[in-house]
Image (tube, rainbow, N blue to C red; front, side, top):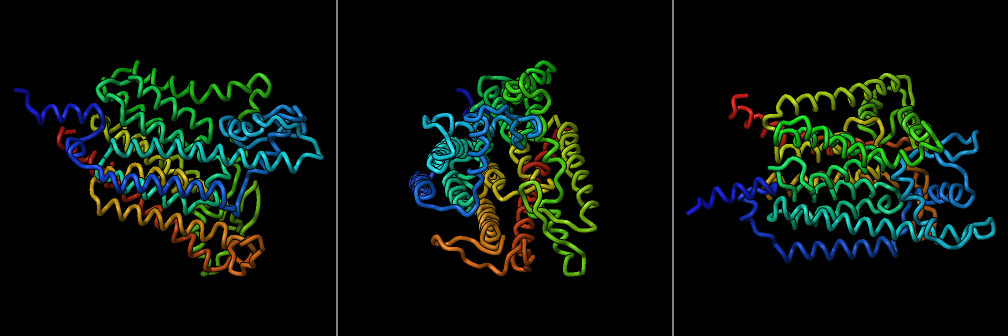
Length: 470
């Protein structure tokens, strides 16, 4: 008779689940109540919620310029082209609601067409949100059925707390790519380096680069995991080619008309100063009471910090970002003997979250996927108490984000259709209340990411390497 434990271990290796996970039971009642809560919350956000922050009118303006006025996209305004600080994948999300609207745009019909565009854009985002949630829930069930219900509730609550930025930005496109990758990766055969699920997951990550670049930080860890299966250079080359094609083809569409201008958005975002929400800005806010000169300034469509010390900190942010990820990739390659499943999955999932800790730009909508990946990879803690602590902290991050953005950001916000004065605001008064909330938000988030990196990557890799004598 075959050894049952051996069979369980083989199945676990192939499906990214441990024998303990397979034995763990799904709380179906809690799980499906969580799914129902998600759906009801999205119906409310789609049909009744009025966000304080929205980029949809900006998207509409760009879509009209390209689709109705037939101006070429990706180029300087001085050349008669449409400047756009987004990659092509994000542009397609902006363009689709206008493309499917049969009504012609004119100056006279502007408001009517704008209202239709706004409704279609939000419905599109709701559909993407629902599909992403289905993929997330399926991935959670495969990773750890015993904690899947908690994960469903955790993501529902965290994302609902971010409702002001959920359907009025393009970041759900990034989150959809991450969820598709996660679902594929939990279904892949880890004994085969490039099965169909692996290829589809790599393509999802690649297309995510064409939406917002952020998934690029996942690629090295995934490729090391693919290489580790058979340790053949051809596997590495094929995996990298899949990612490159999925990321590059959307850009290639615009090369004939725009040439290298399709990459102008890189210079736009790379030239930004310290965004007000970034962790570096929070560090400066800590010393602001000591007399350090700081002031918020609005530039490149966002609020940033200005002051004598900001340029030096901005330089340090660049060094930390590139050096930090360079060292992480070098560490993963050094530990490559231990970097199979599930370490490659964990590292790739945590990479976007870590990016928010070290990047000089951090907008509130980034937490849609920044907290989502923590909910996803957190089930790998395999401990209910720790996972609940993680979800509670993530919810605190989401709540503090909304406390500042939009309710304590500027001099006023709208409530019940009326403007409500907010004297304790961040960007006009630089008040200590929103400053403290922002510092606390970033502190909790950085601590969460550091804790997960330690528990899920450093400690397991060290134990495996020690066991193999590496």
